[in-house]
Amino acid sequence: MKWKMTGLFLIPLLLMTVAFTAINLTAAFYFLSGEENPEKEASESFFSYTEYTVAFARFITFVKGKPSITEEGQAQLIQRKAWIQILDPNGNEAYSLRRPESAPVRYTPGELVHYYKYSGAIEDSTLFVSWVSKDDEKWTYIIGYPMSYIAKYMVEFNPLRIMTFWKEGILTVLGLTFLMVLTIGYFFGRKLTKPLVEIINGIKLLAQGRYMVKYQPEGLYKDVYQSLNQLADALQASAVQRARTEKMRDEWVTNLSHDIKTPLSSIQGYGEILADLEYEIVADERRKYAEIIVGKTRYIESLLDDLRLTYQLKNHLLPLDKKESNIVEMLRQIIIDLLNDPQYGSCKMEFIPECEQVFLVFDHGFLTRAFTNLIYNAVIHNPPNTQVQIQVMEREKAVEIIVEDNGRGIEEEEVKRLFTRYYRGTNTNERHQGSGLGMAIAKQIIEAHQGIIEVKSRIGEGTCIRILFPKTEKEPPER
Image (cartoon, rainbow, N blue to C red; front, side):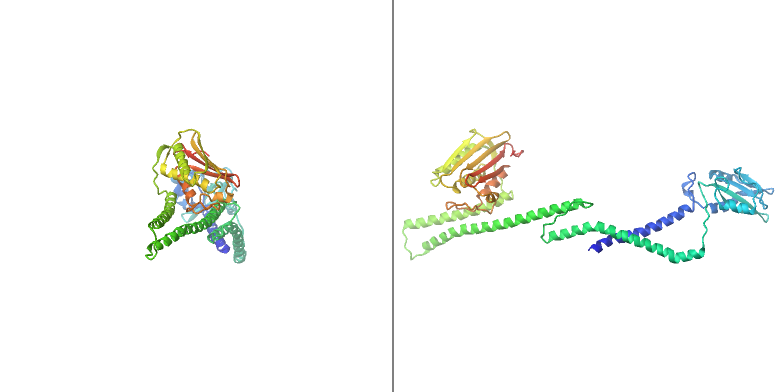
């Protein structure tokens, strides 16, 4: 994997090096072999001075045996800031235009060669030489160009040594160059690909369910490392939550199966008695057995209704019929109904509303069920002499309701799971029969009213449940 990733960087680097070298050599040859004259048209900005000098012969004319230059030729020389001398066959000047004062008027062959070879031999000029024929005689002409436009420098070389160098030196230089590029590219590629390999390996670990991937966010891939760490944390939290949910689901299925199996056993037993024609029973017994069967059937139906309700609340499928009502009156009626129940008539309960009228917009039926579950939970999971206190307080932006008891309390781990759909606390006593969905349903109903519910509890001291409702549905309550 490392070599493959490195190769992805190395091969393009080598190709770019070769292309870059070829382009630069071509460009160097092109630019150095010509001159850019800013005063010329763009289409003529590059040309060969040697070719131009040779072609300039077309502008040289002879009148009565004396050389001259056409107006077009003069204009071009002036445009290029060049000067010209035309020499007769004996090397004497026969014509000149813009000739520098330091330029001789007669040239020997040696002088002509010297001035031609070296730029700057005559002021700041570079000389190019050609000739024109007239009556079987050759007239030499010299054109001098500014050194800022074109310059010449002599280079001496040994052809044999060049051939040897081409065979050995050039190949050696190219080999060393490619070796250097290969080495630099390898380490550069390793540096770039190492984080990518780590990231790919980290993704593979996540795919295998190993979420303990942690990287130090740094370097070029800092954001990628940070995102990978966040993904690992999220997947790990999801896995823990999934395992916890599966465990609670198993517990709930076990409890629900037990709660359904027990009344089903009673229904089956009493049903078999009623169906047995050989078994003689009086009318009172028959009615008693039938009432038991009906009661057990209703109990099972209640369990299934709870399951359906929590599913609807979780998926927001239950429409709420919200109306403005007095929540103090609703809570007072719940307490009265509980105390009128012979089973809970001896409960110690205290209702403390801050004022008699606190109006909120809520679904009366569902919110009644939610607080009934909360208050009943405080009663049935505590000893008979437990004091239960319900308080209602109106705040600036919210209504606060507290259901507090001084009972046995709840362990910290159970507090975290108190409102879970598949959870039934370990403190449930023999008086309680249910699906374990009551507290989950209460929380879901409160949250459907944009409410907040919090629980604090200490073993041996009791439990406090705090509920906050916003006065307006648009604003969430402040904790």
